[in-house]
Each structure stands twice: as structure tokens, then as C-alpha cells.
Image (tube, rainbow, N blue to C red; front, side, top):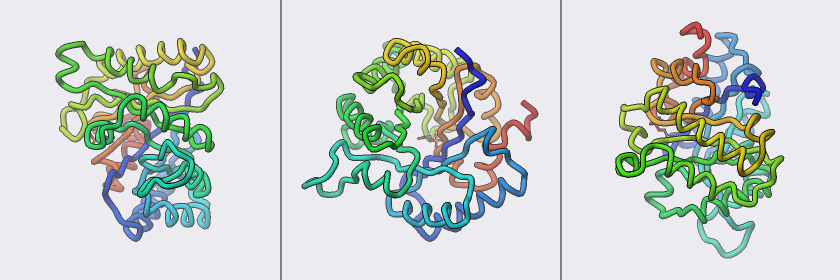
Length: 263
Ligand code: PGA
């Protein structure tokens, strides 16, 4: 597996924060801040995941100003179209040139009862519409105590990847539920152990090539002060950042981890 071929990916999950006007100001500032700092976007990819209502504004801004930032949605319907009030089709995301969509975030699994089957169906829907799924997996504190760290994320990823084509483009985010928004991040070593187990799942489900090129992110209380430790791990290829992605300076410092900490 050639780790060098995976471009590090720093993704900002805004959750239900920033309306479309705030999104425009934020994305402009983020792009300026990174460009000012001469960030090499080919070396470390950066993307934001705003609420649905912001996406059209972000698309317009990114395309008009040719900003080197990616963007995606935080969820997608498993259905293509029809009588599904409140749902958003992958076809709509594709029309908005979303490169990515987060699927199965723990908040959706917990608050919206998204099962592994739902996550599997949404992964298939994203791929069908040419949007790269960012598949989130992770154990709760209780799972950790009962089953150790990898059993639950491994089972969740296996379920999500069932029937996925071996040449599909997916991103995996390992987010221990106990680390999300808690200020208590996993250690780089913990993240690496689970990321390695997840890479084995990708090998089994999609083959060696896919395992070599698929990016596995760590998420859960990532900030500029701890990102470098995660990025030093061979199987961690980036981060899915929640709270710290809402602060332009902090998020750009995370994206620029190679510079400010001399990794
Ligand atoms: P956090 O959230 O960085 O605020 O812990 C991460 C996430 O939920 O994706």
C-alpha cells in the first residue's frame, strides 16, 4: 500500500452553524487566510461541509472566485426523488457540484436513528450520483468498554461498503463518539490502531488498490494543537473537524499543520 499517494484531507463539519450569509463571509476569509499563508492546496486538500441552505451560495462563490476549496453536504437521502418531505437527493448535491457528502455521522445515527442499513443505502446513493461519501464510523464510550475500540467501527464500515464497487471513491472518518465535542480527543495511537483496522476492512471489501488510495480521517476534538500527532500516523490521512472548523484562524492552522508544527 502506497501511503504517499493519499492526499491529506482536512474537512470542516459545520453541523447546524452559519447561515448562507455567514457562510459566504467565512469561506471568503478561509480562502484568503490560506492563500495568504501560501497554503499548497494540492498537498493538503481542504473542504467545508455547510448546512444544505448554504450550499448554493458556497458553490457560487467557489466557482466565481475559483477558490481552491472543496465543499460537501452533511447528509443525503437514500432515495433519488419523490414523496420524501424534507429529504435532499444526491442528484441535487451533484448539481451543486458538491464533491463530498458526510454519511452516518454519529449525531445522525443517534438523533435520527440511522442504522447501518440506512448508512449503506445513503453511501450507495451518493456514489450513484457521483458524490464521494465521507462514511463516519465510531464507537461510543460504552462500546469501547464492552468491545474495545475497533469492533464497532469495523462492523459499521463493513456494512456501509457492502456491494460497493472496487473502483469507488470513498473517504472514511473514524470518529469515536466519546471524543466528539468533548474536548477529549483520542490519542494518535488509538486513532492509528482503529484506522489500520478500517484499512483492513477496505482491503477485504474493495481490494488492495482501494485500501491503498482511500483516505481515512480521524475526527473528535481535533484542534491546531493536536492535529500534527494524528497526521504523523501512517493510516490517518486527515481530519474531520467539528467545533474548531468554525473559527477561520483555528481551521486554517489545522489545514496548515505541516507548516506551523514542522511535520
Ligand atoms: P468536534 O466534532 O471536532 O467538535 O469534536 C467532530 C465531528 O463531529 O465531526
